[in-house]
View 1: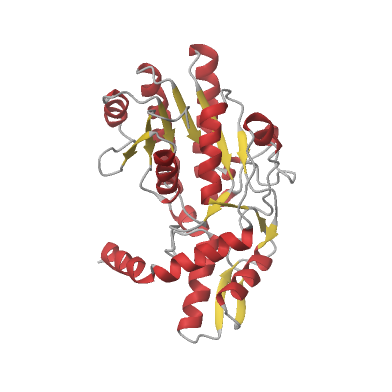
View 2: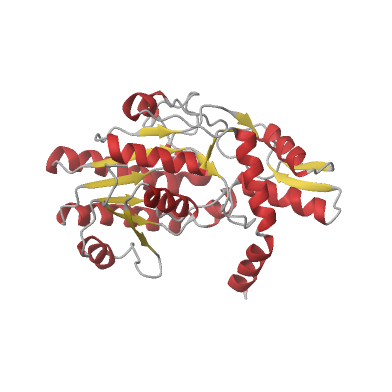
Length: 323
């Protein structure tokens, strides 16, 4: 509590999925968070980054969550946008933060930065051992350049930035739009709607053979705060839950938790994405005492309940966006 009390913390993407949980937890610790919204700051523009870091009171810490991100489908449709927007937001924010002498910047990378065929569990030192999985490589590479920048700026300027690699996140408040969402919210929506509409099957992309690791959003926010408080190195750090599950197993688990008993039809013409994902999380535990706490089934139940309680709001928002 004493570290965070009175600290001014600017959070880009603070009104997003992870950001809303992080803002709440920062307030609980006595910090004074500032939510950096896209309608107020276009971080792909240098002048907006400069305006952000120059505001008063000056930020003690900037946490850069903002990203243009989504599942396999939207990644395939927008490789140029995902590369450009994510690269420019991060690079310019770090440069203007350096010039403004911001004491610390926390950069949030992505598991998509790892090579396609990384040995499991992924170790931080493996991040340069190959090219990322093709469907999300532009996004992954754009985010990985922030690691290069962080290390170069520490070496040349003594600038204090850190780089965290969270695995796939899920939880209440996630994006449930089937076009842009990740796998867990997409599966929850498909199963819940199938039960509600008496559908006897759902369709799922890929073969189900790929594996993933998932981190509950509150665990991710807690890890970011622990790192911001206790970690001061530009060596990357994984944030994960330390388990691996195949997509096939995940589908059956979500079907059971939602009460869906129909057929699961696999569309093998669609990509699986990276074959396997699971992190070595020992560096985070050693460096700043981080360990995930929320049980996977508990986290899924919380996420399912949130979706059911907020379906009407979600549908209204989608309708408004597409009208």
